[in-house]
Image (tube, helix red, strand yellow):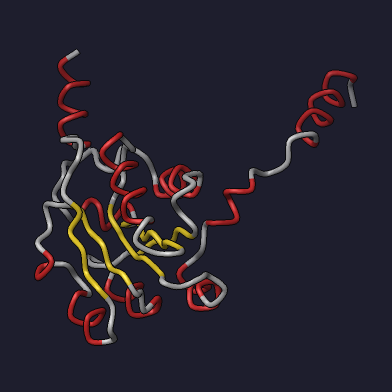
Length: 174
């Protein structure tokens, strides 16, 4: 082994895996992992393809509604089925999970491959179900189930008018 290889290996060992990676939770482990989270538990979901100010503001506001928050991301196939464009998602699921997990407002991040997050919502039984202001509460997936178990449903108005689609259009014009 060369001295250069040893130096490279040694430097890598000095930098452990970031702690936020432990917030990434496979769906199969979700029920077990949420048991240790404090209540009230907030749940939200989305693609979160290219994180922007609107996203992080919304996530911080959602998290403020409870003691812990779970975010479920659409898988890459689930994003593609939404018709957002042939090139979406821009960032693969693993990258979107890592970026989401790095946020202080997020306690746990998981994913779903279906068209809706209903399975994750039923597994979490959130006390607070949240979506952005473009979703009227009565159209939020999981609203009836959350309300039936005594929870609340919120549609948080957009404070910053941003969208990944608009951002991508701007980039493409450059």
